[in-house]
Length: 242
Ligand SMILES: Nc1ncnc2c1ncn2[C@@H]1O[C@H](COP(=O)(O)OP(=O)(O)OP(=O)(O)O)[C@@H](O)[C@H]1O
Ligand SMILES: [Mg+2]
View 1 (cartoon, rainbow, N blue to C red):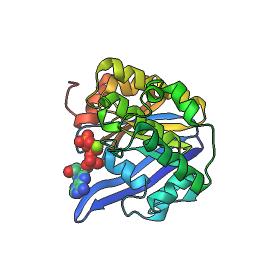
View 2 (view 1 turned 180 degrees about the vertical axis):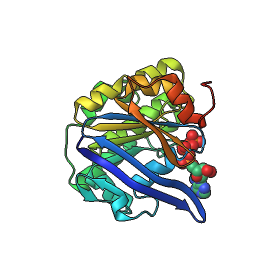
View 3 (view 1 turned 90 degrees about the horizontal axis):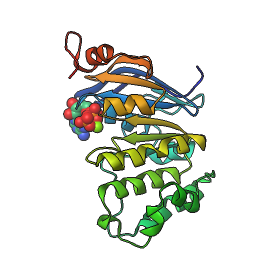
View 4 (view 1 turned 120 degrees about the vertical axis):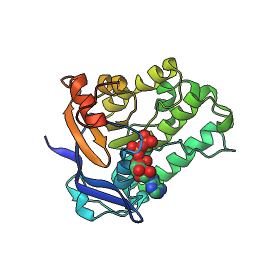
C-alpha cells in the first residue's frame, strides 16, 4: 500500500504525561479508516498530533511523501488535511452560512481548490441550505455536526479526520451523517473516523485500527476482523467482548 498519510513511531505528550507510545498508522488515498478504542486510549491525541496541534518530531507524521510532524495546524490544512474536531467548535453567534464562509475564505487564502462548493455541500446536506441564515447554536446536534463536516470539506481536504461525529446523536441522524462518507470519498478524499460504535466503524470503513493506552493493539481489514480480535485489542488480552 502506498500511504498518503502515515505515522511512524508517533509519540505525543501533554507535559510529563505520555499519551502516545510509538503509533504506526497508514492511510491510502481515498481510503476510509476507523480508529477505535476505549475512552482515553489516545484517539483524539492521535488526530491532534497529525494536525500539528501537539509537538511531535517531523518524521513521525508523513503526508504525500513529506515529513509534516509538528507543522503548525494552519499549514497542515494548507497541505490538505482537515479535521472535524471533538465538540465541533463552531462559531456561535454566527449563521450556518457565515460559519461555512469562514472555511471558503480560508481555503481561498491558502490557495486550495477542489470540488467542494457551497452548492455541492447543500446537495450533500440539504438542511444546511434551508438553515443557511439561522444562528448555528439553534441547530440540533446532528445539524451542527453537518456544519462542522461542511466546514472541513470546504478546506478541500485530501484526508478528512473526524473525531466522534456520531457522539450523542440519534441513530437516524447518525445514519444520515455516515451516509455522506461514500460521497465524500467519491470526491477523492480519504477519511479517518474516530468512532466508539465498533459496528458502525466496521461497516463504514475499509480498515480499522484499535488503540489501547496509547498503543495500536490491532490493525485489520474491517470486513475480516472478528469480534474476538476486537475484544482483545479493545480491552487487552483476556477480556470478552461487551
Ligand atoms: N489536554 C490534556 N492534558 C493532559 N492530558 C490529556 C489531555 N488530553 C488528553 N489527555 C490524556 O491523554 C490520554 C488520551 O486522551 P485522548 O483524549 O486522546 O483519548 P481518546 O481515545 O480520544 O478518548 P475519548 O474516547 O474519551 O475521547 C488520556 O489519558 C487523557 O486523560
Ligand atoms: Mg477523544
